[in-house]
Image (cartoon, rainbow, N blue to C red; front, side, top):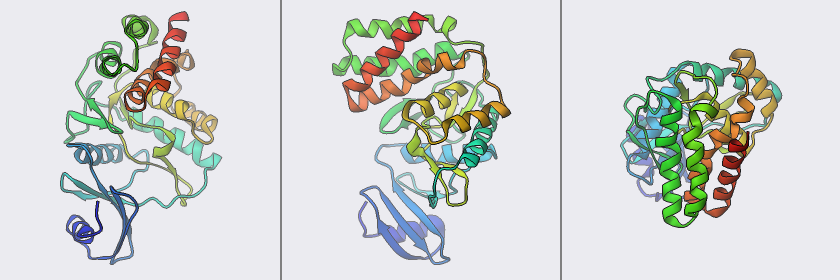
Amino acid sequence: MTREGLGDVATRLTGRPVTEVRPLSATLAEVTLADGRVVMLKAGEEPGAVEAEAAGLRWLADADAVRVPVVHGHDGRRLVIDRVPQGRPAGGAAVRFGRDLAALHAAGAPAFGAPPPGGPRDAYIGHAPMRNADGTDWPSWYAEHRVLPYLRRAVDDGTVRPAEARVIEEVCARLPELAGPAEPPARLHGDLWNGNVLWGTDGEVWLIDPAAHGGHRETDLAMLHLFGCPHLDRVLDGYQQAAPLADGWADRIGLHQLFPLLVHAVLFGRGYAEQALAQARTALAR
């Protein structure tokens, strides 16, 4: 994104005059509106990414559970949302976030793989394509639409060897017995790593950059475990108070991490593939 024209774009999408534009990167700028409000202007790098993010934020907001930035508008290429002033992580906020996340999941989705209303079927997780296709049961949907597409891509790229791929394929075949009790489709953030969890100056937790879809609630929690989260034990305390997890959930964290690990293997290489293989072997050994 260049500086030229950014103020005009923000004015068109918000309906308010702009007093200052501060580019932060090639795709992100901080914009001050005439009423004093500060918003973020983002440019989508992939077709459909802006629509997917806007629809995802609105779907999460509709649950009236977690805090997400307001979407002021988008034009298919650029998106304007509220800026979240960032503070310091705190235990009390973590407990409240856990309860709020449980409420978000309980808001549900029409099906596993369902996209947010108005969102594209062909969406993204980070910079990786993510196809939202409906499924009726989590094990078969997770294997077909969340694990195997990225495994095949990793094999094609040479990041995972064909012999190694068979380990993850065996996990997919055994998912019906490994997945634990059946759960209804949950409304997921979908890309809940620490960088998308903001600790606001208001003392609350805010979520950004969703890859929202209908899925298994343990997947969001597994993502928090994978990349770390301040006060994660307190987050889990709050979650369990609001919506206790099924027995054995901690043993299934690795299953749910196969998806993000394989996405990262496709995007960033062999190290993440080795982590995915380690989780697959652990799952098969249980």
